[in-house]
Length: 212
Image (cartoon, rainbow, N blue to C red):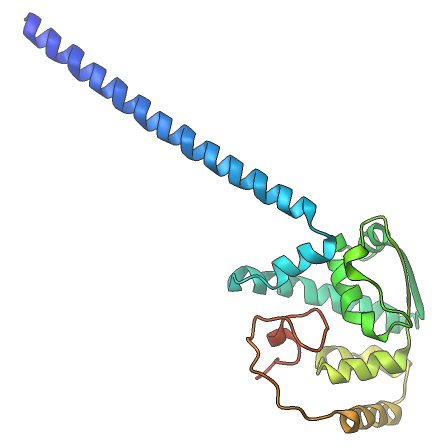
């Protein structure tokens, strides 16, 4: 009888030790994950808004990148619809205020500014922008329209709201002028997930590479 009891005690001890080992492994794994997430958070906090946006929008994780752009592009379009419908020639405020006004994140507002930066009277230093930064975006509709044509952003330069800014004949003339001004250069092959070389801040496949 005592032998059976001894066997049961030994067996119970082994189970207890096994469970402790598994629990220890679980704790180690949990601790490692916690350290990784904390480091990731610290890295994000060290980044500027622009760097944070670029790291997410142009990461190598194709699926997550597509999801980010699928969420961003309709919001970007709504800002342009607002600007055109209201014939807004000046958009100003802090990054946080603009984000709240257009129901976007601060990073998305910075991405929008990056896309429109080339048509502004003075270039904005993107990495200097924080949520508290005040910006004044002076809109030149002719430059904006031509830049959209240059980027081949059909979904933007064909917005119905453009009819309230320029008549059809003027828009056709601008398109022709823009196409004539292009210089054909044989460029190095660009990856579809790489940043578009036009400087729009978008992925190549979401900008000049769309439909290719």
